[in-house]
Image 1 (tube, helix red, strand yellow):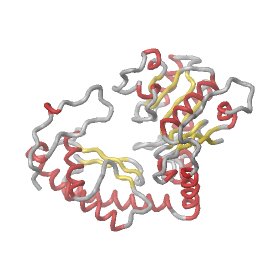
Image 2: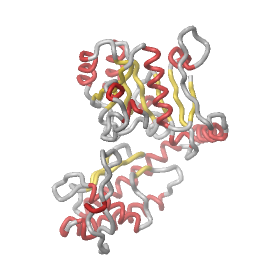
Image 3: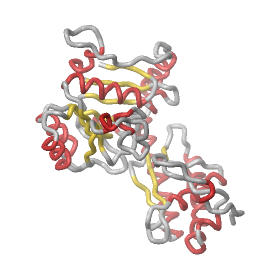
Image 4: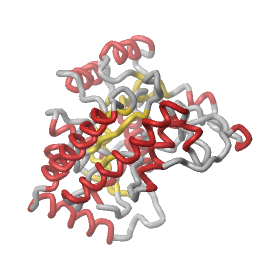
Length: 339
């Protein structure tokens, strides 16, 4: 069964509520290696931005490690009979180890919990249009969005009928108030999603995403080799959805160097907070992106020698999840960047 809504946070929160109602349990296990599942209390309580969330609520969410079945087993041993569900992305920048996803589902079911797979990013981008289909696994509940509407606000919660129907009327258990949104009844988003699905059925969308991602990755890696930056700029993830890390001279991830890289790609006409290919990206688009990144690397090289602050025109970007705002008084002085 499926239920449609407008954003990912609403869908994942509905999945959590269903899991609690179905199992009669109150605790949730969230993958600590995946950064964001919802703006709701059950997820944000695990971040540094937990202000406003009662400790009684925060204590109901526990973390586990990706690709580590022992961490899941440890939670069940620590909280016997209390865990309703484990939620994670089927794959992010690191692929699942052989047998991990199937093993996690078996551990969950053996201990009376559900497995929830968040496919907001992987859905409609991975081979087979989902990471779980690609890896031969099926969650009890799953969430989809983003590419599903091609920019239109739509997301979906899908899952086993006996779980999903608790949000309806066709059962004799207590009802679950599942979803309610002001614009939930509008239908142009559903029309957009149908058009997207028809395009995926008729055209080689996923294959194109990966082919163009392969081209992009090869070009960037060639540039890092040529510029001597293999220790300082690292790509990760499936080629259809690449992410990167900017590192300092010691190979340590650096927000200052990330800011510098973003500044220099923007100057060259490319917005690159991540490197996600689109079905509309032509070979020329990919090559232009590689050229812009190579130009940014030239500045990056100089910054490794004389310091990134010399080249920045503003303060460094900061992590999204941080306990307090960063004072402008502590930011490095603005200077004219050298090209």
